[in-house]
Length: 607
Image 1: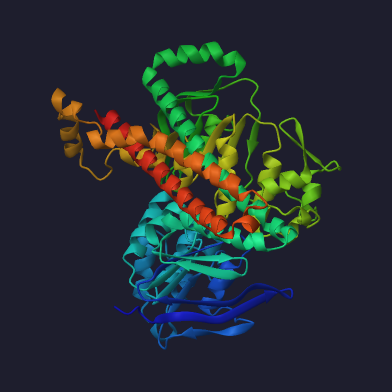
Image 2: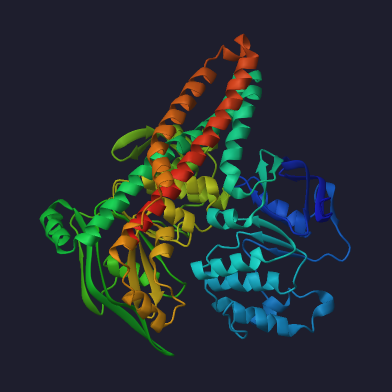
C-alpha cells in the first residue's frame, strides 16, 4: 500500500540566524494519519522547524508545500493573548476564515476544556492558558496539527484527556514535548534534529534511545577518520549520554530498594514512629504530619485541601505530589515544609534542615552575568560543590555546556540552557532537603536527563510536585495524591504504582462495597504471584544484564584503543556495530526487568 501524500512538506529548507545556519537542506513531510514526534537538543531549531511548517516564517532557502485546501493548526510554545477580551474571542480566532459562523464549536471545545467563555485571558493560570491555546488549535478540526510542548503546565487529568483526543485524531500530527510518557504513547515515527540535519526512523519515541545509541555507535567509525581535535569537540557530549545510561540500572535497583523500605515503614505502623523519635536528634526524621486539615473560604463555598492527612517523611525519602490544577498541591507543600500552618493537626520538622528551592521562573539568575560569573560569583575558576572544589570548565561539562561558552551572558541563553545553569547553581549549594515545584516545565530532554541523574544521586530528601509521569516513575519512592475536596492519600512507588493502587474513581459506592466484601479463598490468594516462566525470567535477568554490561565494557575498551581502526578497519566497524546492538539488548533487558518486578510487587500487594 502506497504511503499517503504529504499534506504539508519542506523541501531543501534552510534557516540561518546571525549568519550561521540553524539547519540546512531539510526535507520532511507530514501526511494524513501520521503521528510524528520531533526531538533534539534545546536550541537545535525544533520550534523554528514547526514555524516553517505552519507558515509562520519563511525559509532562507528551499520551499514549503501545502496541499490545496489543507488546514494547518499550530500550538506555539508561548502563545500570545494580546488583543483578546475573552477566552471565547481567542479560541474563535482558530476557526477558518470561511467558517466564522460556526461559533457553537467554540462553546463545545471550551466546555470540554472546562473554561468559561467570558473569562479574560489575563486572568488565566498557566494551565488554563495552555488549555485555551489547545482549544484554539483544535476548534478548526485541522488536517495537520503541530503542537509545541502541549503538556506544559497541564495537570495529569488534562494530559490524559489530550492523549485520548490525539489518539483518535485522523489528521497528520507533529509533536514536540519533554514528556516521555506522552511521546511514547502517541508517536509512531521519530524525527531527530541533530547538528543542523534531520534523521528519521519509522519507530516511535519509545525506541528512540536504542536508535540513538545505534547511530552513535556507527558514527564512531567516521569519528576516527577525523582529526582528533575536531572529534574531541563533540565526543564529551556522547560520552556523557552513554555514561548516564550505563549507570541507570544501578539507580533503578537502588530506587526499587528505597520503595521497598518505604513500604515496610508504612506497613510497620507505630514501630516506625518509635524509630523516628530515636533518630530525630540526628536528623533522621524530616517531616511528620499528623491529622492535618486545611481549607479556604471561597466565593462558591468552603474549599478543602486536606482532611485528616498524616505522613512521616524520613531522610532520603523522595516524595512526589500529584493532583489536578487547583486541588491544592502547592498549599500542601507549604504545609509540609512549615511555610503555612494547618487549620488542625500538627506538622513537625526535623533538626538541622537545609532546604533549597527550584525557582522555575529563574528570577535568581542575573541576565547580565556570564555563565562563568554565575557559577563563580566571588571570582576565580573554581566552583565549590558539596565542600569540594571543581574547575568551572569541568562543572560546565557536567551540565552540557561547552566551556568555550563561559563568557556568554545569561540573557543570550535559550530557556533550556538557563534552566541548566540554574540547576548547576542550585546543586552547588549545600542542602539536605530539596523542594521542587513543577521543575520539568520548559525543560528539554537533555536537561531532564541531567536533573534525573543528579536527583537520583542526591543523599538528602526530595519533595517533588510534577505532572511528568515518567519523571515520577524514575525518581520517587512514594506519591501523595491531592485529589480535591480534601481527599489526600499516599501510595508507595511511582506514578504507575499510584494508578495500579488507587481506588476506581468511576465505581459506584455499591460496587466498591461488593469489592470490599468479596473475600477470596486462601487458595485464590496464593495464586496471586508470577507464573513459573515469569519468575524464572525475572531470576535470570540480573545475570543477563551483568553479562551484557561486561561485553559492553569490553567493546568500549577495544574501541578506545587509538590504533584499533588503523590496524583492523573491518574489525573496528564490526565492534562498533556490535556495541550498538549490545546496548539496545541491555536497555530491553532492563525494561523487561522493571516490568516483571513491578508486576511481582503488584501481585504480592493484592494478595
